[in-house]
Length: 306
Image (cartoon, rainbow, N blue to C red; front, side, top):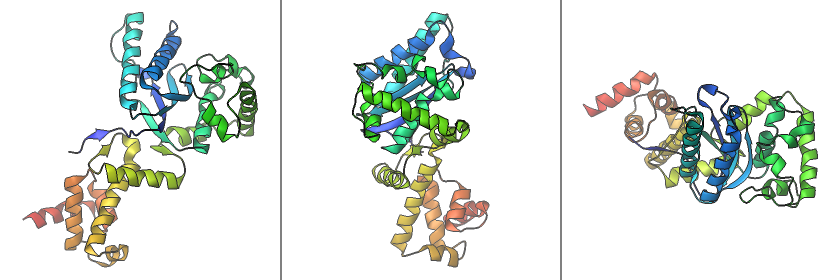
């Protein structure tokens, strides 16, 4: 069975989201929010991460983190396990602190990055924790820290400011604040739409950039099944790449898929390879190869082996 893993490569940017176990208000108890923030900066220093934005809410957090080295997994393991140990010691509790595995969504460059940074910074406003005019007073966020002359090592405001053609300066942050006001006032009811855009799927960015990444991952890691239900699109792209390669080798086209009979020998051979080398299911195989009902795939493979 192919191994499962996160997508990691040098310079990758992620939207990382994690919630407290049972959605409990994890970060409101006895300065636990500040304790998590300290752990976060320790992880940034240890791993050499660039933290473009973060916000710690009552029961979850958002990070926009760039990994110059492919070390998201080891860094997140240290961050969450270290905080869990400290939290349980502080609260005199035992057991899991976070709800399952964290979500890590890859982010494209330029506008997708700026949009996500805006989304993270405006989280307290859209959750009605504080009004926009008081956003700088929300301490558990990168936003107020960017209004300092000297920004803490690891925090990176230069990249999202440059997307707005602004230099890395305090004056630029005041202009960025105006930018946020326009983003929020344009449509304050967009919370659900924005959540779908920035918190779901496996990649946020331009279609061409996603396709290039899919192709690169398929070619470099043909044996890997990417972890999580949000990787469904990438896994299917990998399976589709195998189908296209085998069809090309056999001199077959998409028109042949429709014209040839559902149980054609060449279709069965490709189906067998998909079943043995990937996690593709009968439904996907039957639809992609035009083989009829999904149960027919298993029957044809068994018959071919007989």
